[in-house]
Length: 377
Image (cartoon, rainbow, N blue to C red; front, side, top):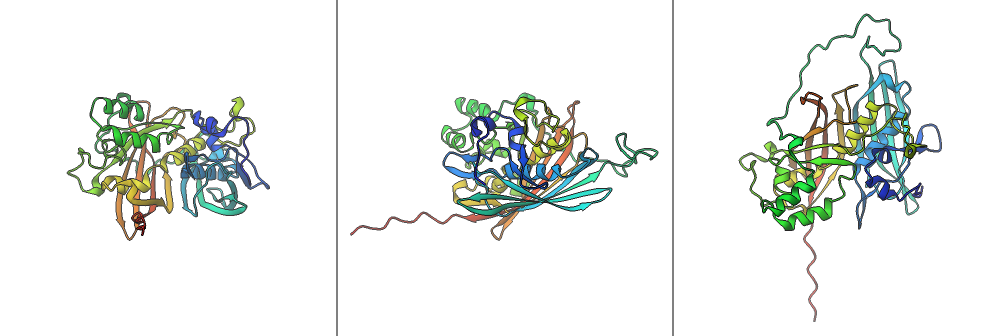
């Protein structure tokens, strides 16, 4: 299916920061088929590939469109494989298969397709599992149970060390530019970083604690930097950031004129889950390169599969909350790496609660050296 521009220029619309334009769908050819309302954006000018978060979040929204009584079910598991690259400015077609419908679980599998140069190919397959709210909760439509069952065990891991708070930080690009002006960071790698990653956060406000390995090395573009984590082994080093939605994702009840005709996630909680899935796909494949100080142009790093688990239910809230993320690499060998991300949601009292974890197996191969120019006779 060819790309179709609906309304304003697609790039301008999505760069305007609305998550609705990232998540929005329209009906496909049958009840369990959907098409992206706007096609995913390319990574940047001259690079046609799209950020994987587009396909992930659109696929999850497509799955949720087929979950009846979605208000009573929580997404808790998202698993899948990248089957091929997603091309920017080309619509995603999403086919949903209903695998399980019971009183307690709803399971959906989604395959994302694109038609490029007349050939239809699969980009991704995703399986979403939703679990019913605990018995006896106030909004349980069946009722009839005495009270909500208590947790057998209740605990939450916390970040170590505790991060520099986002209220003391500027937006990432402003903070980097300020530190370049004061001489704390070099200008050349910052310029390259801005050129390659300048539009990577068009829907997300991003702040980096200054003690993070990623900030001190300008996300890998300044690999020779001395950092406060140099004494740690590579698996102990941490990539860290704060993020939240510039314009919060909305649910199907949205009354904003620009959302008319869009199929949005059924509830604010599922919209928040889609936003987290969109955001958490970032940075994982290149984490071992950054933490090992391997220059980014010397290797190709691509995600092969993904596994995300949500650890919050109705309290998951991307409508204003800040999220703190830590990323580590656990192993890299055999041309593959395994990387994990943990993200905490900040509550109103400033405390952090674990919201989701994500892992990816990634391809990690050296790039061949550039061909030597042939000698002239």
